[in-house]
Image 1 (cartoon, rainbow, N blue to C red):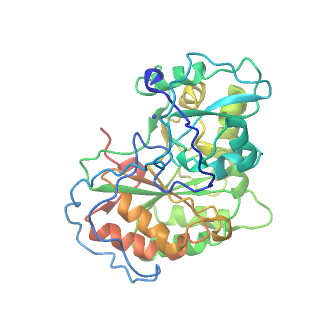
Image 2: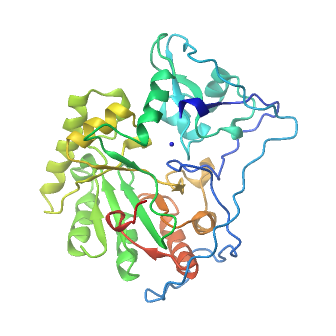
Length: 369
């Protein structure tokens, strides 16, 4: 995640807002469902940190979500359609849902669906384009298509986009963003320590300096005290969409976070950067690369743990099952230290991955192809 292979959203006649659990933001393809049994339990299983990794189960058969029988094929887009005034084209990323996009662009699922003539929002597909609020009448998806062409061969000095590690390895990287909600961050960190699970933490600078809670600073203290288990990456200071700010503002966001973290630990966040909302383009990759962040870390399994169950978010059991069932060699899992059911999901998730023969690593240790 090429201009010649861009797909567009289809209009299908069934009205339903269904979250596509198979989509994962940051993958080069769809999710995979292995033939290994789905873990049972409610996420309270005891995990043995000394379990001997086994060879990962064979590459599972890819399962592609299929629209209803009456759905029409995705139309071939015109070369350079112009977005209406007040909107712009957005390329759907793995892990995007109508709900997350509506929140991100300050609108509603119904309004977003109406803007794009989408009758079944569950058929969102990574790589297709949709209209979102913002931009001008001259905005076209051509620029985004150019970005896609540069992803495999970025300009010299640009940050390398990493969605996953080598599929031939048995390594898997758990990553946790920290910003906004931080309960139960400390409980998650202590559980990882107690169970000898490596992870990479991506804090925002504003959370480190939050005057209402010292949880962010305590997380940094635990990271610094356990360098064999944890490492840091930069997740910006105020969590803006980097594709909407200037290069000078990008540098400021990164530098302010570095300064905030440096007040509490000597550990460096470079060369790891995770873009807020997973939003990037060629300009962003160039700017963060020039600032010392050689890797822009995405993911290929998204737990969507930031969403509460009341809003359609995952339970602890479904979250654990999603990760265990969709993990492949080199998988990068996206979670949050403030995830609603993340703590409850970890025991079954970690045990299930260990049972499949995976070994936990920090992203700096992830073998890359």
